Length: 373
Ligand code: GLY
Image (cartoon, rainbow, N blue to C red; front, side, top):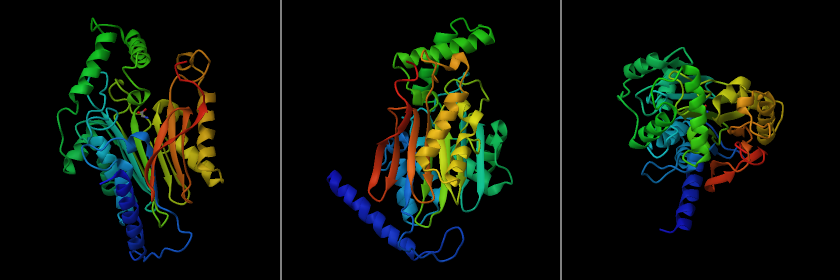
């Protein structure tokens, strides 16, 4: 079957599914929903890896999420089923199984999810042994009074919920990368902690400059947000966090308002890139608040990028031009179905899926050049 044919089928199926929704009840409220003219067009937006990895199947994350959503599944269930593809794919070494491990060679994962209509959220931080932390985050949301469970407690919780716990989520690739990093920073094994931290940062930047690592490996993550034809908005973010982090380090991904924020009446925003820069500014929350005041998703995203740039003053975080030496990206949609992908340095892309099928689009950049220039 030709590519064109497949796309036509996808559009037809999506359209048929969209019509089917008109006759269904809201998954959330239970009230019958009628699609009127001007109803929101369903849409899924994500980081670029959401339209790259298929884990040996036929659909990328955004395609899977969009298909399920337009067939009437709950928006959050659809988004999580999408990111599960990336979490389980060993080829993405920034998320889930095969994610680059911490400084001790252990894969620790972070994830959060938010359900706009239900106004509920869940998250896990530094969880070990579960390939799909996004599903554990959802279990936190559904089965507890809490928003965030971390470390061994998160693993015990997952075990109790029936998740399979594995001894080691490394793949040959993630272990090889970790060993290379270790060899570079700690040949004697006995550097003092300060030198070790400096050497670790330097080694990672060297590997980045040599093309052994991409920025998305260092802080790689997937964020995926969606809105269905009923205007129901949800989001999920999942990651293995910063490569070779200090064990127990939790980034922005599981922190509501940082790696993800959803307000069902306004929109959703999520992030990939340097988590610490996001945490300091709680950018996803700020983006949603900017949109509440009427800003377009792109302008709201640009506003937080400027804030991050202005709040980055430490020399170790600046390049030779005095600009941030790291990347950070935001994926945003609002209740009207408008969307944007924005990035600190131009040249990044993001993924989107609507009735025309999945697309990888250029993100709007605040700065030109490279973070390392
Ligand atoms: N944004 C992913 C992290 O910093 O952990």
